[in-house]
Length: 317
Image 1 (cartoon, rainbow, N blue to C red):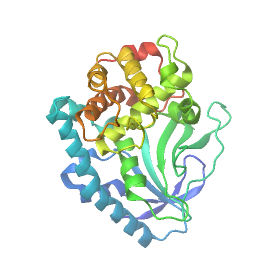
Image 2 (image 1 turned 30 degrees about the horizontal axis):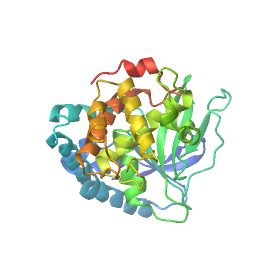
Image 3 (image 1 turned 135 degrees about the vertical axis):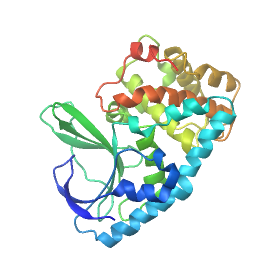
């Protein structure tokens, strides 16, 4: 049973209400598939939102995840195995939500949106902040200092004045929170790193921004692998606008992580000029290599600095 209790927002110190047993309520709807839910889920709301409203919203979220979202993840997970790109044993290892140190907080402000909080994570005096996604401003990574380190949470709100979009505000964010978290170092650099084409990258001399963009692209393609999210770009890949950049990204990924399977993906798109459909074998080939890379990145999502090239080269399947 849900109870509303006083809470403090870790990214601002302000008061809120928290729905207790939130994950248990969602898991009740999901049955045997609940093991795929993010391990650390919280629901916070403005103090002026009623318990009845919260209960109705949590029920909607639970039914959506149980009836639509988790079955989709499992279907696509099994498709990876059927195509022969992975095994059932490996996919169980890759899709383990208990490894993610980044919690997921659904935050329901009475008017929608997310708070505008100044950010200076490199300034030791600043204790917390919220870094919104450049494209969807009510999705963000919240951060705060705790015993000399930085903690982060994936923060999911709703568009101002609008109800929760279950597909975007819940489904999309749930995959990030379970298996493909947004690294803190990538979110702080997201807008700057987007302006750095992969086709200009030089192995052996990758810049801070390029290394941050590699990790951000991995987390977004990892998500799309499980959700089948199409993107209206020439290559059909999220966070990559042009085919030249798509091939450059895969070449960089293969050069840095030669054991993860990006070579197979490169071979499958060698002469490709049309967007890659999310149900095509080539999409899953890219996706499983990406999920292998994300498995290694997950423990580093709270870090401020992207991994260097030597770290990437040490990865193995």
